[in-house]
Image 1 (spheres, rainbow, N blue to C red):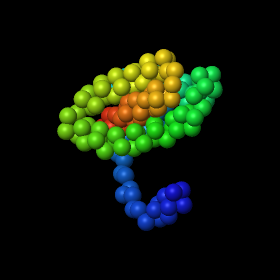
Image 2: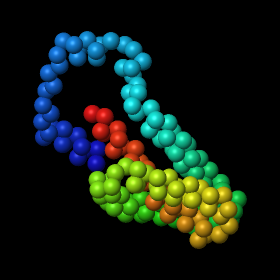
Image 3: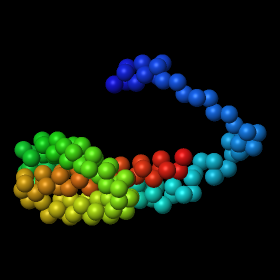
Image 4: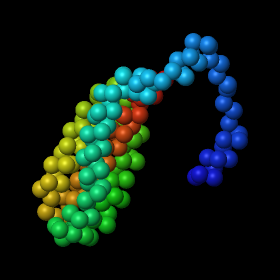
Length: 154
């Protein structure tokens, strides 16, 4: 994919952007605002906390599987997560376009939270794979939802 992407850069033509003197001055001026977009801070805070929850799962799921003796299901945790993430994206993308961000984001937060709760009480393989499904259905659209508002800033 990297080689394909590199080859594509030779084919694609990016139009040159002409900046006014005022825009050039604003770009060269160093300030806090030149590093942070104020409108993006609420979304960045949400991304931080949701990613913190997901990173905790990534970091400790293997240890948790061993401790709970769920090694067999643990082999398939990220497979199930990936499947649910990939298959949820086309539907959530359409819902973003038709119904708006909040229509997708709030249920995604809820599904993600349900997944975290189920993980806290998981005792068997079915529950662990249910957590993976909830994570895929919850975190996958959240990632998509995090990107869409950022693209709107441009």
